[in-house]
Length: 298
Image (cartoon, rainbow, N blue to C red; front, side, top):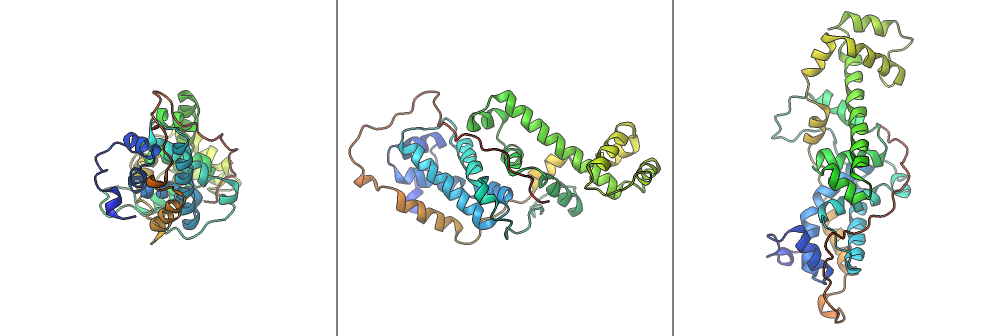
């Protein structure tokens, strides 16, 4: 992909690019690809934990997007739609079974960050997110790291908005409670004699134990000292949102585009046909949801 292929398309909206792509404008699709490959890769890499599989998932998402657009199904919100397609591609059983690969550090803050969390706390937030299933994590990632609203997520994955809100609230509560409990187990005992006594009375103080975590949550409800200690750290969702983007490995974007380009019919070879016009209020139908995958390793 060259700059010449997307020159003049930067000012077009996502919707305009999707309409152009549906009408065999290869350069419009190239502009859409160039605009979103990197952030889709970041989401996929954090979901599948494997650099090669992440790149393949994003390529597959764009390949499916070509099929949808060629069929005249133009999404109302192309960005949310592409995230949903990437989520489907990244969370297939086959792709997740490939196992973790080299994706670089996933708990680093950007160099320009003013995040007050220390590295240990960032790693705790990330490892807590790793306890979610891949499909759960991908929803959280779309919402917290990439700013998609519950309404946008609902429309893109084919559920009602109140269902999306409920799922996001449950996932967020799990992360907040997990981070709070584990942080206090590891670093809160010295500052709170009552917590220290509570943990010493338990058969185990293993911070991965759900029983121990529930005990700490019960203690937290009645302990001002521990609530104050937690309040000194940034909210877990803020920390997750501020983690540095995972950059595609060298050549990944170019390789994906080359593969996609070979499947696209050049405009001059496209048989004459009536231009595809978007139907108001009609978005591309998302693939049927797959069953939730088993939890990922921390």
